[in-house]
View 1 (cartoon, rainbow, N blue to C red):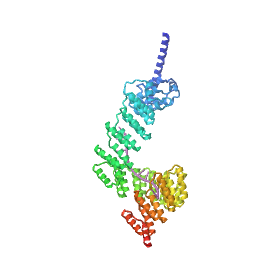
View 2 (cartoon, rainbow, N blue to C red):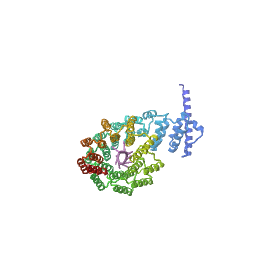
View 3 (tube, rainbow, N blue to C red):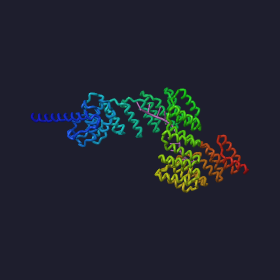
View 4 (tube, rainbow, N blue to C red):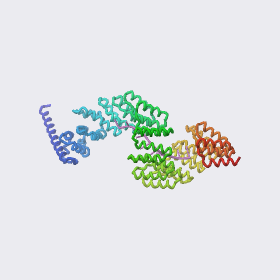
Length: 610
DNA sequence: TTAGGGTTAG
């Protein structure tokens, strides 16, 4: 190349660069003048814009950050020429400005464009290699990769997040555990197998400073998937690496066992906590109230209350809820209500859960007036009355045969936007059925199908039961077939309902056949199954067979209830076996059962016969 | 930055 030519090129490039600088300065001036107002300018200046001028403007230290932001937004939204579209370099220049100002939230917004915009779509590695920029602050690439990783996590782009993690590892960057925690939580929420465990392992291998926080998230994820043992193994493994479980880790495991009703292991975990000197907090007590309540150790619950008071544990809404639940389950509604009042007096805000527990307790004890008042109270407090609570109340009304009140509540709630669900329809149908209003009962279930709701096994069972009660076994059987064709497996109640239907009709053979079928399907007959069969045998005079069944029950560890005793005593009485009848009567009383009118009349009948 | 509470068929 001749010297002349070279000079020519240099001159040209110099004049271009000076032109760029001129227009950059001009635009900067306009930007400064316009302050916080959106950027506006004439078209000749815009047509001068190229990536050089743009970068000159964005890196101009005289230009305040908000003006850079205005300009960047203008570029992103207003320009249609592809050559003027902000490229990677433009984004990074802007990011550098933001970084100097410490505005990391805004950097994440800009990174989103780099990662997801159709014309960019950079991986972290590509972003750094294409840009190839240097920075006086060596922490900048570390921070930028971390933010890149977080943006991927926030947007659930797990593939990209993994690549960003690998890049940081490859570059020897210190990886922030808090970013990894966000990833773990996102993975756990997405229910993607145990990917969170795999990632946790990579964290440990990669030298991330893992704390009890990330460990607990992973253990919780495992517990929620039913893999409590795996969670405990991880806990032991990490203890060996110096990461010790804290009260929350233990609560997670305790709660998982209690939920699974795996009560045998709870004591072991509690002893472990004692050995490790981990003190209980409110959440621990919440789980323990449920645990001791479940295994019937009521004095232990009382002891817990004392201990809590002694230790001045701050009782929160969760703990109140489980305490109120415990009182409700024991039928001490007065104490439950007192606790509810205490909660509000303390300034805690009752929520739908506490209301739900108390309303359910009141409904179960038939105190519908009080339950209804609580519902109104809830609405006044502005707490959203959810479907569960409405269903609970409806069930309460139905149990008492107060169908008009139930219907009224449905109507009122529907006006407020409540949409009956499969539970609602079932509750209404079985309520009607209990009052022998079979046609209305069926209509509720049909209405449900009309509303495009898919009937589940319970709904089918209720409908089968209604047909059985009407004596229409043929239709009941048809439905039994139909539900299975639709992929709904019959459960123990379905079998019991059908067995009862057959037994009442004297079709004992069919009843026994169903019992065998349920056993073959892995469903063990229970007290209800036997009571129906005993009833069937008694009604059709086969008291000896009934007695055989009755004995079989105890062999299987099943405890007869009032209904079983009533049925067998009445059968024996009719057969003039009053001695046997009285023996069983005494047995029933000694077991603490309260006989109802039917037992008495059966016995009286048997006395007259002798 | 990690955990905990209620309800629904015979």
